[in-house]
Image (cartoon, rainbow, N blue to C red):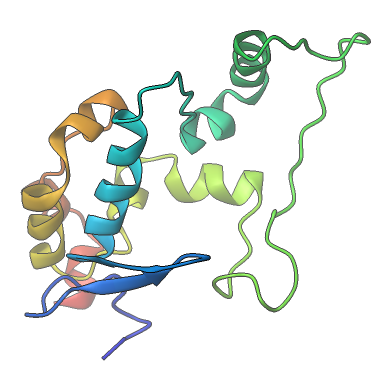
Amino acid sequence: MHNARHCPDFSGNNLTTRVKYKEFWRKHDSILGLWNDFYRAYLEVPWPRLLVRIEDLIYHPEETTEIVCKCAGGAMREDGKFVYIVNSAKKGERAHGKVRTGMVDAIIKYGTFQKRYEGYFSHIDLKYIRDHVDPELMEMMKYAPINPLNATKRSFWNKFH
């Protein structure tokens, strides 16, 4: 059963999830398995591809956009003006989730080590992620290893246990 206060919850026995694509359904071991499978597919295609981390767009938007433009054969605006989109890209009631995160909200939410772990209510969740995330993807995307013990030392941990 889904619990909005503990999401994602990796403590259950059956974590499988199914995703409906336009023409088919696909089963994944968990929502983390979905993440692994989704990005792993990009690594295994035989044609050139470009992956852009959301963190790079949040923390280095102009530099990242310029690199992407050059890679794709484009260029930045001729007037040199870079336009920051600070409001949420999520629009309308059908957008996933109730919280609409804009640029400043994302910087605040993900900008510190402690903030990254605040949403996890159990060290079991973090252990599951550490043990099941694709290490090659973590390395490629320059993500720090998951260490549940570091998270348990944070003051927020005591609020939930």
